[in-house]
Image 1 (cartoon, one colour):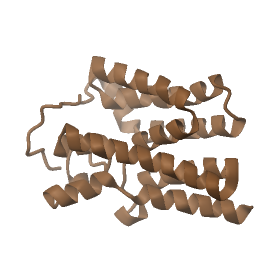
Image 2: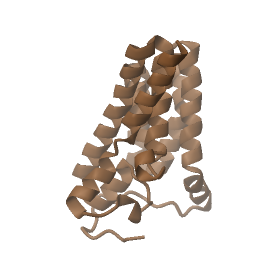
Image 3: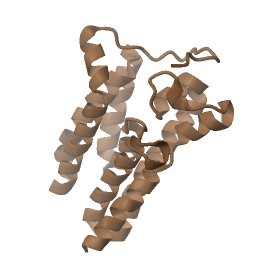
Image 4: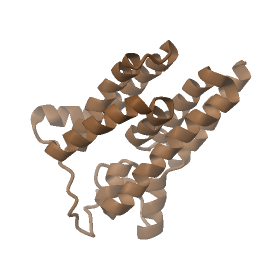
Length: 204
């Protein structure tokens, strides 16, 4: 059983290493997305660098890899493999060995995980995310709030205890990856998402 769980973790981690944001900027700009904007290889930074449409495709692909890792984990090692595969994909997205352990923040991948595990929970966090984003245009704030909501929604919809624990861990990942954003939010100088972006984003 332990061998299957390790396999589920490795599978999830390798799926997480697939970085649509990094690849899209490499293809369209022949450059490294981490040299721009927030310095992260994630969907929000892809929007900053390549625009909303391409960034949305990146977001969807990141969600799909989260969902895919959950399904692969379940196929390999059952319900516990589902949890392990989910942890693996977030680790792979945030700390990809193929990109020198400099990845994204795992919000879209986490969304895909929740969608695969509990569509009801996903609907709640998706609505909250969009409402906050529409009213504030601060992606980090929306991400932090839904990160905190995840374990509560999983508990509310009576998911198994190991899934609720997974939700707590995913929440911790999101909060830790957004520690600098939290400081900027407290200071009142967090950047807002601008959908009317220049075709030449600032290089770090």
